[in-house]
Amino acid sequence: MFKVVTLENGMKIAMEEMDGIRSVSFGIWVKNGSRNESKEEKGISHFIEHMMFKGTGRRTAKDIADEMDAVGGQMNAYTTKEYTCYYTRTLDTHLYIALDVLSDMFLRSQFDDAEIKKECKVILEEIDMYEDTPEDMVHDLLQTQIWADNSLGFSVIGEKDVITGFRHDSFMNYTAKHYSPRNTVITLAGHFNAEEAVRKIEEAFSGFMPSRDENAPGPEAVYTAGVSVKSKDIEQTHLCLGFPAISLGDERSYDLTVMNTVFGGGMSSRLFQTIREENGLAYSVYSYTVPYTDTGIFSIYTGFNVNQASDVIHLLFDVIHGFFTDKVTQQQLDKTREQLKSNFLMGLESTSSRMSGLGRSQLLLNHSLTEDEIVAKLDAVTLDSMYDMARLIFDMERASLCVVGRLGCWDYEALINDAK
Image (tube, rainbow, N blue to C red; front, side, top):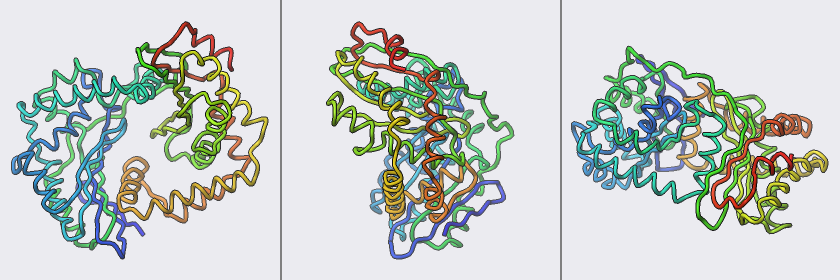
């Protein structure tokens, strides 16, 4: 059973003690990501995540790596559009070493200009690598298309001409405004003593105080339907088809989860069976959901030979229309629910999964559900509620398309309009 404690400075600690294991996963979650940036700050949240590993007043970058390696610990971080996470996994006997290292990085990173210049080169290489990965790029470009000029459409990794202008003061000013106790959650899952952990964490973060100039909510993100294409001389063409969806924490989220799994969430899904197994038009094809705190996207991805663009797009829409004419049976619904429950419950055997679940839910939703509550919500999904969600999602007038690769002579806007 998890426990949540709020410290005097407003920072939360969410914990779950697990018997019978010897490891602990520990994370620091900050409600700040690319969505919180201005156009002049594109990529700074991701850059800060990198710089946290580059030295503090007490440790060099090598010291940080050596201390974690010395105890066999794992340490990493990642940035999303709405939050950043710094995390470790260690043996229970080494938890407070991890706490000392990670809190030092989080609170006392130097953001040295010499290190900034070096790390900027690394991120520029990361951007080039991203440019060479069109199957990843197409998802980001779809979001840029859908959210237009809103910061939700910004790429997490940033833009070259912006990140090369960041200096020490850029990071100091940004973290002072966006890294605050009230938008930070500490999470632990594994073998530890909760009372001792709270005391140690409170000591480590005693100097972490609210900023006078904290970040205000950004402008509302408005879904904009459209078509965007990017030509690249590569063998395969990559396509994402998007629709507006519900937000994170919406009571109908479990209806959407079940619907997505039946429609395109695995090898037995209708999308995979139709596009790949029956017609052999693609190696990879799937659907997925991207929920945010106030909105969301339902997206379909596939990669194919450009000569088959018309066939692929028409088949995608055939699968959507067929979802309503060839109805899912109760037996198929029951099978999908059991599949989802099994994946969820088996995933909870990992301390990292439990820690991550606690972090996201406490940071973004301000609450967490128990295992039994989540299973009950999956069991409550009916054929009627799933189809209500499907009708909400598949609004053909709001379909968006993004294509990256060889474009051929196709008019993609005409193709999508004809296929609808």
